[in-house]
Structure formats: C-alpha cells, structure tokens
Length: 91
Image 1 (cartoon, rainbow, N blue to C red):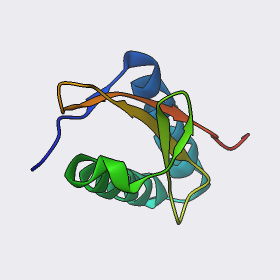
Image 2 (cartoon, helix red, strand yellow):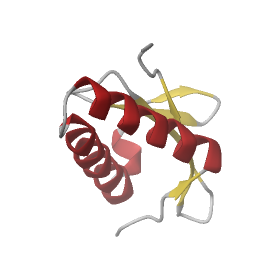
Image 3 (cartoon, one colour):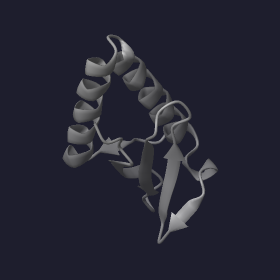
C-alpha cells in the first residue's frame, strides 16, 4: 500500500534552494539531487514505518548521497503526513 506524501511549502523552498546551489556547484548535480530526493519520497511512501521515530511521532529518512534528511509523520488515517526538509549545506 502506497501512502500519500504531502510536501509543505517551506520544504519546497528548501528543495528549490538546494537544487540551485547544487547546480551552481556542478551542472547536472541539482538534477541528481532531485532524483535522489524523489527516490527517497517513493521509499517513504511505500513503507513509512521503516524509518525510525526520532521524537514525538516525527520520523526521518536520511539521504545517502547528499547531506539532507526528510522529516515526516504518519497520520492516523493511514496516509503519510506532511514532509519537512532540513539539514541543508551552507553555500
């Protein structure tokens, strides 16, 4: 069963900012970042309980190739709840 993942606007801003930063570092790296992020979203959606709860219902999926984490919660309705984005690198 796939769960719906909702990305908050503040997380969308972080994603756009990270994409631009990586693209300025190396052309194509921003696209690689988005690819890795989307793979992580798919894994969360497929099995959100696979990721450990770190505090008060908040779970975290770390990215293996970029220094980012996706923080999320699971709604009691069974769908995956909102997603926040953090741990961005400093330019």
